[in-house]
Amino acid sequence: MSEQALSNQSGVSSKEEMENALGSHDVATDQFLTFIMANEEYGVDILSVQEIRGWEAATTIPNSPDFVKGVMNLRGTIVPIIDLRLRFGLEHVEYGPMTVVIVLKVNTPTGDKIIGIVVDAVSDVYSLTNEEMRLPPDMGDQVNTAFIKGLADVQGKMVILLNIDELLDLQEIPDAEVLRNIVRD
Image (cartoon, rainbow, N blue to C red):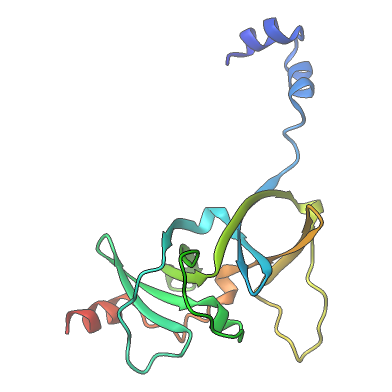
C-alpha cells in the first residue's frame, strides 16, 4: 500500500506519524525456526534454513561418527545428515512420522556447507528481539556452551537458541567432495 493511500486511510499525514501508527520499525528482530528434541524446544536462525523434509533413509558412510547418519542427494547436492539427538548425547529414538530433517546452510572457515539435522519434530517460528534473548548461563569449564546463542522465554517455555555454525564440529563431518566420491564408488 502506498504512503498516500495509508495516509488517507489512517488519517495520519506525516511519515513519522505513519511509522508511529504502524509501530516502530527500529526494534531489530530475528526469526528462529524451533524444533523439539527430548521434550525440549530448540531454535535455529531461520535464515540458515534451506528446507524441511520428512525423514528418509540416508546412505551410510563407513567410519563416520555415530551422529553422522549418512548422506542424502538433494537435487544433485550431497548433504551429510547429522542426528542432533546423538550429537547432543541424548538417547536415540526410533524415527517416526514426525521426524524431520532440517537442511541448513552452515558458515565455516572454508566457506558455506549444506548440512541436514535430524530432529524429533518442527515446532514453530518465533520472532525475537535482542532484549528477549538471554546469554547462556556460565556452566564453568566442564560444559561447553559455545554452540548456544542464547535462551528465550517464549509463551512461558524456555527455548534454547543454537548457534548452528558452532554446534556442528565440521572437522568430523566429511567434505562434500569426499562424500560425492564415496557415493559414486
